[in-house]
Image (cartoon, rainbow, N blue to C red; front, side, top):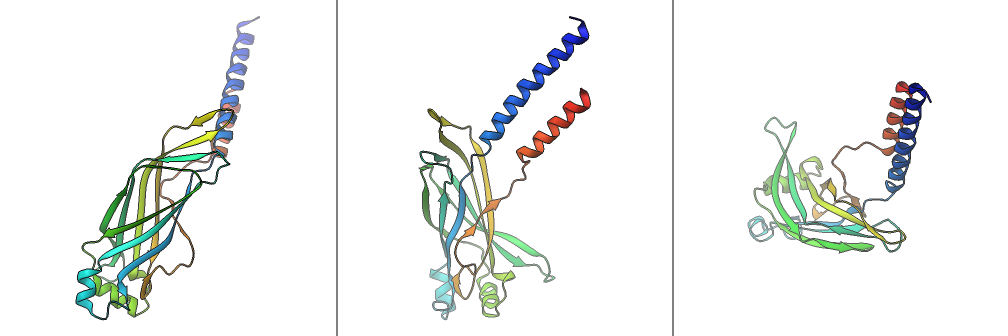
Length: 221
């Protein structure tokens, strides 16, 4: 066989093996990461039922409590191993010019690592600091949504347990989620039902990678 024929044979072998691993990766990519949502979000200091006495409300009710729901959408027998969940809470404050909102860090909490089979709930309370409560109460009373907006960010790493012929545990995957939360004059989130946290990290879909690889191979064939 000529050198040119050997080269073509080698390239074809590399392409076939590469596509095999790529398609295997694409199949694995169909495994879903868990979904996280806020079911309840309560700010006592903004609840008009308790904030009539402003000094008492500010002194004794500066916490924020929330219920996080984690749902594993993979098949039966699968599970999720969570590393420590680091949760940060922010308050959006109007700037001096009244235009752009400034994000103030007001509290954080950590949830120890745990294993999830299907659905788990985490009930947490954050002790806040540096919140301009007077401004927030005025915004709630005026029906303004932008000035009564909070944000919750969640950072962790997860490993997925997938039952094929035998149990397989994936490598650690970064979990970086967040969502804005508006609050009404009852101190509750304004969005009814679940408020889903979305990914704060950009990603490239498997289909885009497949198209890119095939394009490069065609150009170099």
